Length: 233
Image 1 (cartoon, rainbow, N blue to C red):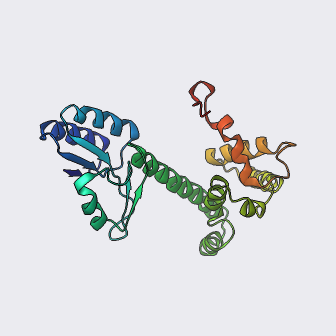
Image 2: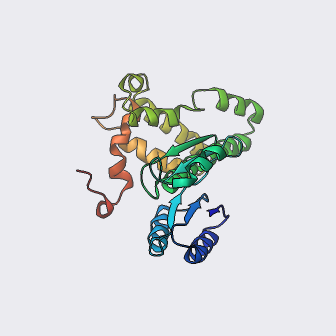
Image 3: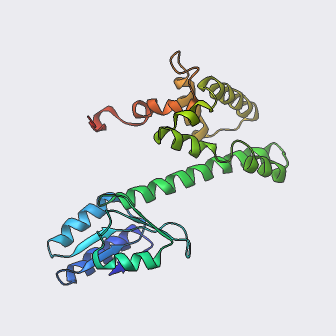
């Protein structure tokens, strides 16, 4: 059985209720956007009946449709070939629930970028700037893609690429200028406040002249509560 449902409640109801009624050896392929906690709970529940479960959320739209498999090659068993025919690509993410985790991260990045772009254009409209020209600059200029690319370079340990990025001091300078511009216009943005707080705090003696993507070193301290940190040693 393959499911693709619009809400978390529908996913829970269909997967658990129908899964409980399926015969031993059956397979549930869950392609909705859901959460890793649910994937693990559903898998444990269905396993008691001998029913297999795999999270396989889809990303994008057909025919360019990647499937994010929470597992290694072969995990969907006899359905592996079906997935290969149904998708433009398959990304196997190693463990149960990882498909849902990565799909949610993808959505987070997409909607965060949307919100920041929307706020920037809201400000432009408020200030009477030419919206078409502003969109052209934002799309073609240095602000279009490098944010994600810079984070990728850090996590992929591309030292040569990181060295080409501006230093933290440049980012903090730009942030200060943007903050003054927004303040003068009476414009308030919680997402910008969060960005400014982080980069200005990161601009320390140790970080001042380092490539700005290296502020990622500080994110565990800024974004994770002490009591909930995982010990990765």
